[in-house]
Image (cartoon, rainbow, N blue to C red):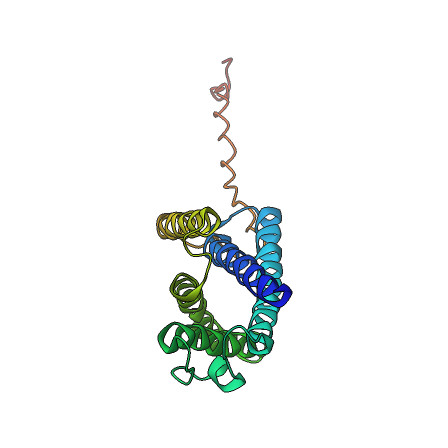
Length: 201
């Protein structure tokens, strides 16, 4: 029973952290204040890493628990599980995509452009994990799961809309403003008195 309780709680917390990581990943590039953007990126990475660790623990507990028959192959290969193959398969697919996402993040410095393309798998990982949780989770009808799913869906949708309207903020130091100096005023000519030759002016 302890293993089953840890299995359920790790899955719920991991899902919440994944939702937070997705939201922060969406709004982060649109933040224009450097300090706020740095805090957002740090929270995004922390929530993603901790959520990944909890997912690994969740999968390990699912394999070790004797309540349901889930083999290591069923946890990694979609459609292999003998128990709830559809929902467990979605969880396995989410786990596989998460593994690809983590490997691409580890190799980010080698090819940043390729990493950005692979990083979009985070949306599929989050969505598959959410569907998996409501398909096979024993707490899917509890107020905790319903609240988590509702808040997560609204937050992701709102972050996406805000990002579309705000766009990406420029990266790096702001360029110095160009100051156009006004030309100096032209002095007015001073009249010179004219003297007639051989006489007074």
